[in-house]
Amino acid sequence: MTDNPSRKAVALISGGLDSLLAVKVMQEQGIYVEGINFYTGFCVEGHTHAIRKKDKQKPKRNNALWSAEQLGIKLHIIDIIEEYKDIVFNPKYGYGANLNPCLDCKIFMVKKAREWMEANDFDFIITGEVVGQRPKSQRKDTMPVVQKDSGIDDLLLRPLCAKNLPPTQPETQGWVDREKLFDFSGRNRKPQIALAKKFGFEDFAQPAGGCCFLTDEKYSVKLSDLWKSRGEKTYEIDDIMLLKVGRHIRPADHFKIIIAREEGEAKYLQGYKKQYDSLKTTSHSGPLALIDGTLTDEELKLAASIVARYSKGRTEPQVSLDFQTKSGEVSSINVSPLPADEIKPEWIL
Amino acid sequence: MIELDCRRLLCPMPVIRVQDEVAKLENGDTLTAVCTDPGVLNDIPAWCRINGHEMLSTEEVDDEYRITIKVVKDGA
View 1 (cartoon, each protein chain N blue to C red):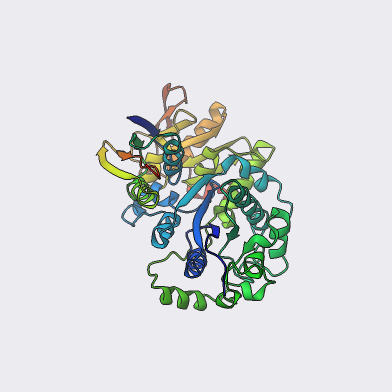
View 2: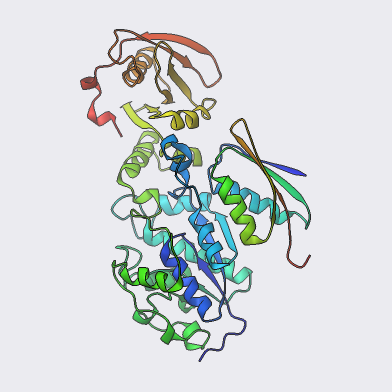
């Protein structure tokens, strides 16, 4: 028996299958649900598809919006880029395998959802978390930490694994029927797939490597390099977007070259020519490259010879390039492309 | 008619900008978002469907997308 004629829940919607199912389970019990999706700047969704030409034929959709539409719920997408920096710089519970502060991230998002819940007169929060599914934030010993540190306590319900956890207020108060909740655990996805089938969901998102660039080893290496080169942990949104694009080559501590790998990336980097000096081959077709840092004339020649290496003139004795400053002054440079074996492996991020 | 510059922003930022601008507008107002990320062709209409706003038009000119919507507020 439930007593929920007017109970309202706010759901953390990632766009993945688990949050989709968690909401549906609540709707089946007559709970009114609205969704929140937080945008940190590190979300994998959409960006690389938008940038890379080879991905342009793939269907583009925001999976959080898609989930909300399947469920018939309102979705509030909230920009937390600035506030999130402190989580990335100083995670109380540390990083995971890469620069992913998963436990601090979950605490922060639940805390923000709690604030939204209180401001909008909702009753409780739901998530699609499954105990044992993630090595840091979804463990039996860390899930209570999320409740405590976010201040939500027992107003956080995880419908997919609730039967493995102590009863929450929505259950003890009879807002939802605990017997109709689930006991999923671990990384096995079969129970979720079966439940999705039962509810008639098809074509749902199942990101293989999570939904956050901070879980990606290569991306984390580039972010660490950015911090090291600046002497402090800092970033702006353009920095973290550029880490997703191109080859990043750092021949010296004080400068880095970002070389487009294909047309879509070149077009994207074009938009940054007023913020960065750039190099572009003129005698042969070749990539656009941005230069992050201030270079001596010798270093500029080195940078140009590296960019020439990635042009169609890589085997020619001389390649010409235009060097354009961020203020728009253009000068021509002629260089020999750097032989492949002179590009040191440690330069490549 | 309000024009919102979302050029160079990648999804979901254009959607967030539209969402935040619409929150300040009245029922019946129209808003045009000018975007460069083709992802908006799916995302802004999806956001409108979810939140009950009306899509008026989509135009593509020189790699820019002009998406015009009409604000529909609850209770109007």
